[in-house]
Each structure stands twice: as C-alpha cells, then as structure tokens.
Length: 145
Ligand SMILES: Cc1cc2nc3c(=O)[nH]c(=O)nc-3n(C[C@H](O)[C@H](O)[C@H](O)COP(=O)(O)OP(=O)(O)OC[C@H]3O[C@@H](n4cnc5c(N)ncnc54)[C@H](O)[C@@H]3O)c2cc1C
Image 1: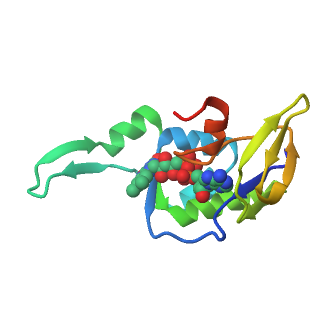
Image 2: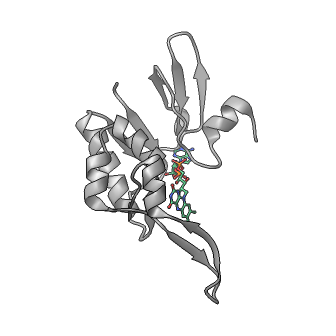
C-alpha cells in the first residue's frame, strides 16, 4: 500500500506532553510493526490514581491487574510516538505532506478523488479519515454530528 498522509500543520512541532498507549492501542500498533519502538521509548506498567487535592482517591487504575487482563500498556512522550509512526511510514515507502489541508472528496468506481486547496486533486484507491474530533472527512460522509 502506498500511503500518503495529508497534514494541514506546516511543521511537526514537539509538544511536551506524554500519552498512555493502552493495551488495545498497543495491539493496533503491533499490526503495523511499531510496538518495539514504542516500548523502547516509553515505560511499561501504566497505572495510578486520580485524587482530590486533599488526597481522597476518586478512581484507581491498577497497573498489574490491567496488564493481567488486557496486556501491557506503555506511557511515552507524544513526539516519540509520532517519530515511531513517521519512521514506519517512511520505511513502508509512504509520504507525509505537511501544510496540505484536505477540503473534500468525491467517490467513483475505482476509488476516490481527494480535493485539496487551489483546485488541486489527488486520486486514491482508499481514503482514510484520521482528522480528529471535528473530522471533515466524517462530516463529508455522514453530515455534521
Ligand atoms: C490533555 C489530553 C490528554 C490525553 N491523554 C491521552 C492518553 O494518555 N492516552 C490516550 O489514548 N488518549 C489521550 N488523549 C486523547 C488523544 O489525544 C486523542 O484521542 C487522539 O489524539 C485522537 O487522535 P486522532 O488521530 O483521531 O486526532 P488528532 O490527534 O486530533 O489528529 C488529527 C490530525 O489531523 C489534522 N487535520 C485535521 N483536519 C485536517 C484537514 N482538513 N486537512 C489536513 N489535516 C487535518 C490535524 O492537524 C491533526 O494533526 C488525550 C487528550 C487530551 C486533550
């Protein structure tokens, strides 16, 4: 599969935040061969508790129990996860195009045509919408929801 990623951000900026990659997400990453890089960049055994300022426990995520039931989760910095995904894309011969905003699509028999700014278009066999909470792709398929 020749993957092309259209990302509207002009550059891949580092944000200084961590992310817990839960066991179900690790299983998805395994399918694209990214788990080794994620494990190497992070710490296993995500767990802990949410407490009020006074120390009263509101909820708990018991790391060992979670791992036993669902498998291992990993916590790492978001840029490290992004680097692992980008490396996998590059290794597979894929391409990341920054500063390109998706505007819409048309479907026909062989696939789809992706509509980009200034009347530019790209033909593809398959369009995957991975454009977040306010997804333009999803709105184009199902309307505003
Ligand atoms: C403070 C905070 C902490 C969190 N912690 C965790 C955690 O520990 N573990 C966890 O699993 N989840 C966590 N989440 C949730 C997690 O960040 C989101 O579920 C996840 O980022 C969603 O991924 P996504 O790819 O769907 O969308 P996004 O991460 O929003 O990515 C969408 C991308 O599409 C691009 N884009 C959007 N529209 C267009 C367009 N028209 N054309 C081109 N590009 C476009 C955007 O620029 C963006 O790069 C947290 C969220 C927050 C806010």
